[in-house]
Image 1 (cartoon, rainbow, N blue to C red):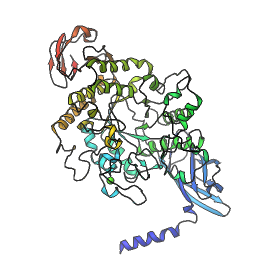
Image 2: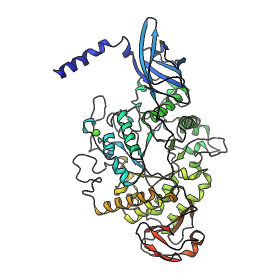
Image 3: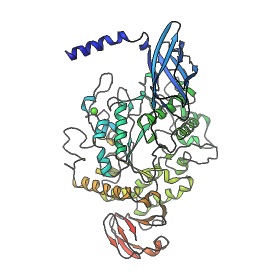
Image 4: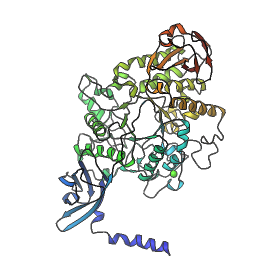
Length: 613
Ligand code: CA
């Protein structure tokens, strides 16, 4: 009977809503916050003929400043001021047109207290793809209104992973020894096909319900915080998905970049800093579409700019987020992106943003880095950049295709260009991510080479990021398609016989990789000299690369013997300026005590991480 009553109420309910309430289909942002440093808020109000309405309100501290209308009468942009006088509550927004009135109670929430947690070299970021990590709620795999259905047999399909799955296994991250989780994008991607990767946003203010609700995401962040971990959200300002609700009724013709026929970007991000780049190449880079299903937003439109900036502020304040990874950073309008980074820093000092800047050259990457004074006057205000040159150099070093010294020399040479960055230790460093072949595959499934690569990335300068599954040597070859780089994490699905969380069904190789990763991560976690110490390295020679992380109190010597079969002798004389004052050491990987630093040997295809005494 109760059930019948409930469904009756649901049926009757719409009739009691104030006339015209359904006319408003979207108000973005859906809520805002008190005590923001900037009192300005711009609402996008969407609904049939909403552009013909006026707005009034009566709420202490809240005033309506101006209304902005576009050529599309279904949009109204409302500029408000919310001063420190305003307290959390419901702000009655009264929309009127002649005798017609619509009242919308707009939620004003309190923003999180305390400073931003930020990220630095004491952190290690674990990147995971929400659709592929763990399915904690099979009831949300398929949902009415969401077009693409789950199909685990399709590598490019949706597999059912969700927030609940991540929350269920949050202690796994803590035990592994990482300090932050970066989720590939989780905003609604209601595309017909290939929606699982999340890079085709169809609603900026809604988590894809197949992952869970906005509140469940907030719960995830809260559970991470309880364990001393932080969360990074992936955002995309360059483009949206072709099924974004805007695409049915654009706010204005210039909301996106439009062409007579489909026009793709040239992907040449170097055209920004190239002093000889043609205007047409530069323009195509910014305005061309990233892909057929990814309409390119026009960030030069001030309404678009404000909309995008507010989405990031909203997610930070709503979920108490710790970081943002901005996708395709050089593709949107660069000046707008710089204003965005400044605005976030002003509102949330110390908040972490890492921009995806995909170049294989430190000179290009450094152009976007914090406090870089570029000759053309551009300043990005971006707190951190993705260090692809270090990644590619590590591939060269450990893929076993060149002679043992050549690859290490590439690593050495890339790091030697750190003078280009005002603060190179802010760079996020990694061996792979969701867009590249996995590191274990790149080494030719060589566990020793994998261990050398991992120990390098966890001890050199920068903020390391590891990709989910690296710890159990998951495989993935880019030539087999992106879906194969993002396979389901074993143990994440009900009925999985292989389970990385319990260790059940793991091979010896996988168990050893998991043990090794956890060992270095947990050692690194409390090793201050790796977090804040300086770096000094020596020219690689004979397949041997040696560097030191040091401060006034301690020093760690890292030696990589990249020779596949040859044991090498390390002569202390060569490193005397770094070994001065130390007589012995302990290799934290093998536990070996080194009694004589003047001469000791290192096995083939091995890294030693030696705490000096
Ligand atoms: Ca699910």
